[in-house]
Amino acid sequence: MAKRQTDILEQLLQLYPDPTTELVHHNPFELLVATMLSAQCTDKRVNLVTPALFDAFPTAQTLAQATVEDVRNYIKTINFFPTKAKNLVAMAKMLVVQHGGEVPSAREALEALPGVGRKTANVVMANAFAIPTFAVDTHVHRVANRLGWATTKTPEQTEQILLKKIPNTWWIWGHHLLILHGRAVCTARAPKCGECPVREQCAFGKKLKQ
Image (cartoon, rainbow, N blue to C red):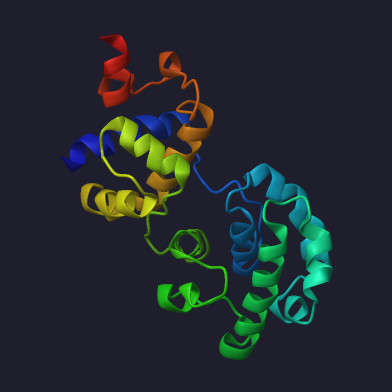
């Protein structure tokens, strides 16, 4: 079964030869902040906001000293910015107090931070520390279910299926490949199945041909 998944991932790798996060960052702290902001918001929008935010608060120490109102003014074009501003300041304070201002690499420590759930922890672990994880967002959840790899209702359920079906050497790349494919081809509305290189191996694509 795993060969089926890896064969498809290898085909997608030809389409997206350098799969990585589209969130612009230069260190684990910036990635953590950007990922927290990206919840229910596009990476493109986050990337428009973070340059000024990082100039103002380049470290956990500086962000911890900011007021929530200060942060809100920088991220007010982001979805749910009042809650996210509150979480960012609280997260930075915890980093300073419990981790010396450094972003931890352990899942338990990451998920203990305000505003950080499993998906955000997975993204940081994989992209900042190269720890194999399979972060599942709405794109990954949708593409995996259309391919027939999962028949699940939530991203959390999909993650558990993918961890069993895909070798861990593919987890980080696989996450990025499914996200990129979900954004470019396998879109939520009007998926471009005619352009999809794996249509013949896709449960959703095969149904369209019937």
